[in-house]
Image (cartoon, rainbow, N blue to C red; front, side):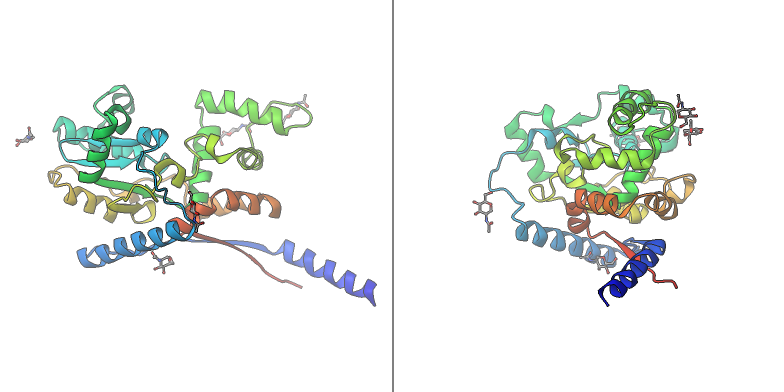
Length: 306
Ligand SMILES: *[C@@H]1O[C@H](CO)[C@@H](O)[C@H](O)[C@H]1NC(C)=O
Ligand SMILES: *[C@@H]1O[C@H](CO)[C@@H](O)[C@H](O)[C@H]1NC(C)=O
Ligand SMILES: *[C@@H]1O[C@H](CO)[C@@H](O)[C@H](O)[C@H]1NC(C)=O
Ligand SMILES: *[C@@H]1O[C@H](CO)[C@@H](O)[C@H](O)[C@H]1NC(C)=O
Ligand SMILES: *[C@@H]1O[C@H](CO)[C@@H](O)[C@H](O)[C@H]1NC(C)=O
């Protein structure tokens, strides 16, 4: 009898494994109307703050974390501060800040990538004396934009390891291969599975900025962002930010539908399907706070098929 049950159970388990089926739920509250948009903002902030309190994530210390202060960029003219979360359309933000600061009327796409990185117009909050840092935080409009944690992870993997960015596709890639390839064959790209194994074995504090959990980059439990934007609703969120800071009409965020080969939900799902159950659990654990604070979800459904 026990044997039979055991066999039946194994059979069920195999069936379930074969039918692993992923679904990622996006938040796509598309709200162009000011009132709806404000309501959504309020919901996002309320939900974040209540989770911060429940988890006891707000520290009583007033002091701003030095690491976080380096993630925050300040624009004095338009009085806003935005937190940089790489892989969340951040270089476009830098372009906007540049256009605003230089008072140029150019399409953000025309601004050269090198121009941005060379410029020192973008000041980090950390470059101000600490007393002034707090004043700026209290008076400027603070913005943070998030993205589905696993989509951001896949996007980082594709950008850094499949495109030829030497630091990642050589240096970091070799580190990962040395750790996870038993045969020490270092040819070929780092696979997504290898990348995930690497991410889950590190302390999140020491993860690269491109895949470090978003809440650790921007500390939203202690910095009360005025605007919590999402990549998933980027067009509306950015246009509201621009009008909130009274940016001139000529500075526009490009419609995100313009980009094509971006990492989207389908591509993300394809990559996630390469992972085993253990990897899925570990990687969702890494981003657990990002999932809950920013209201993203991810479920693996088992489909029984006989
Ligand atoms: C969280 O996401 C769900 C599903 O996308 C949505 O219905 C709900 O309103 C969101 N909650 C908050 C507080 O934003
Ligand atoms: C919250 O954390 C602080 C220290 O960071 C601790 O003193 C306090 O007891 C904690 N509260 C709860 C309810 O866990
Ligand atoms: C920015 O440029 C516009 C014309 O392109 C001009 O009208 C405006 O006064 C300028 N603003 C500043 C602050 O220089
Ligand atoms: C290393 O792996 C690549 C593909 O992954 C393969 O083509 C190559 O033959 C391997 N080299 C050795 C020495 O095993
Ligand atoms: C590595 O990935 C790139 C981009 O997808 C691809 O063009 C290339 O063929 C891959 N290299 C190997 C050795 O698989």
